[in-house]
Length: 486
Image 1 (tube, helix red, strand yellow):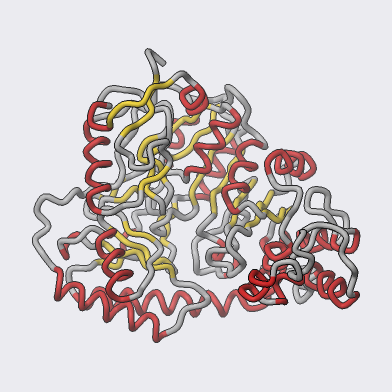
Image 2 (cartoon, rainbow, N blue to C red; image 1 turned 135 degrees about the vertical axis):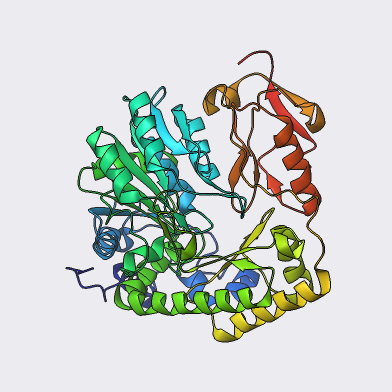
């Protein structure tokens, strides 16, 4: 990627530094007044943090209507990521995804998407009233995980829904699976549809040609990028990227419907600094991450029973490519669910994974990892196999259950509802989200029929220790369902 702007610049950081040096007397918010009003907070975070936790002022620009330093920082980000425009987001990639969907989908519009989307997409549909057209992803029977969308299934969805506004694609999935994004984008554009990409786990794709293609390189119209994941910025900071054919001024208006008017300069400066780091050093950084992940895969596969998978899964369609930085590991041959390995590592070995589910776990490898930490993880996994291995009989094997959609998420979420014991919900229509977090992909979304298989899955996930969220009942012993017919 060839940058045309000076990527060594950090406009927001430079402006914050100038304001701090000016020793301005603050008669504005935040009320802690550079930390002086809250000594305990300052002692915990440090004077450097509280000293730049400031509000919008002329020298620092305004996130809702940037005209100076934030505008310049966003231009640098767009240049670094090969986008026409970039927007700094301080509500996480959730806010970026929701702005992306709501920029083009309104009540009654159709959006083609995989059912294995993040909860932020479902919630965007609840907010805007668009109708989901789900394309069931492929399934890897051995691993029990959902894959990408097949090109043939996309073609059928386009034929069956010629008026759909857009196609939304995960690039990659949580497990590192990538669909054929270039071909899907070509098909969508030929049909007059936009391509929206949830790239929460694909920040690094923009900085190496030997990683899967990025959304902007594939010609997509918009992409939501979690800089705070593989990009190294602070939690809750993200980017929304747009292509040439998207009106950035309207997108800004959509963003401002829900994003705070008091953007945190801690988050904004972290985006600015992290963009600089990736633009100048990203190629070498992610080469190192790929090497660490591959070393870990090789060592874990030598242990036995675990399966750390990679590019050998590629089939040219539902697994068109694989993200080599993802350390996704199948655990069922050890006789343990992924969430059980997750819990043992945390409780017995002080190792925190990204997530564990029914049959797999993900160890997130990033720019902050070291050889020593990889060795510690591998050693702990060998120990767990030796101490905890058991027969896998009776274990649930599949992560994904195809939904039966009865009505739209918005109609179901706002409809009259009743609370029913989980075990008595068979045949009812769900009126809330049920998901394991992470990864935040709904087991049930509003408007879907509750089946016996889904009830069994929820009960099993609870028994294994998965953290279920989204329901009004915090114990997930009851579900909200529609009163009467949809």
